Length: 238
View 1 (cartoon, rainbow, N blue to C red):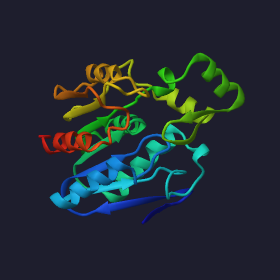
View 2 (view 1 turned 120 degrees about the vertical axis):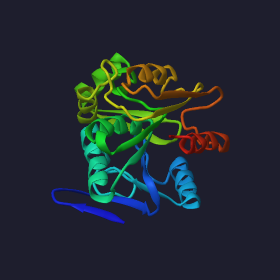
View 3 (view 1 turned 90 degrees about the vertical axis):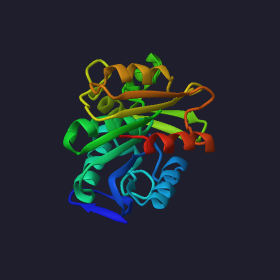
């Protein structure tokens, strides 16, 4: 299905009707709604009679647009468009890696809609800590940086995305979320070190924040045992 918008790329999505709060899955950088975690959550939602929405940012997956034209601001706006056009009532935001950053921004933008937030190796501010100084200079001077990925094709970061990310850094301030928050992270994550989740937990305003660490878990947290922890954590939300 496609959400068409004036003056913006159409966004591909899959919506499952059911009981609320609606689960909204936010993919990571260069990922899409057909990933292992998104599909596992959708299958659980089907079995549980829960409403769920998953989608692709512009330039990703089945959505229109060019990936290298995407920025953090644009992808946040895509998530806002999904919330405003296709959902009613409370939401449980589930953000994977960069999707965790977008989910945090979304929660601050629509505080009255958020029943809970769950980050899976959430990566706010990764434009700051995720690149060496030399890589940042390449991005600024050449306009793009291409890095190999353990998950498939090389990953491109553009100057526009990097600048957008720097404009939305949040780990230096209070993160204005009052809903329950759960942060799941693997301690063998070589992409987003797990201590970023413990730091994020301290910055979130809510008193109901829990960090769940998986000692042998990697960045993807897509093994059957990881998915069991993910689903059990969502089931346990108040």
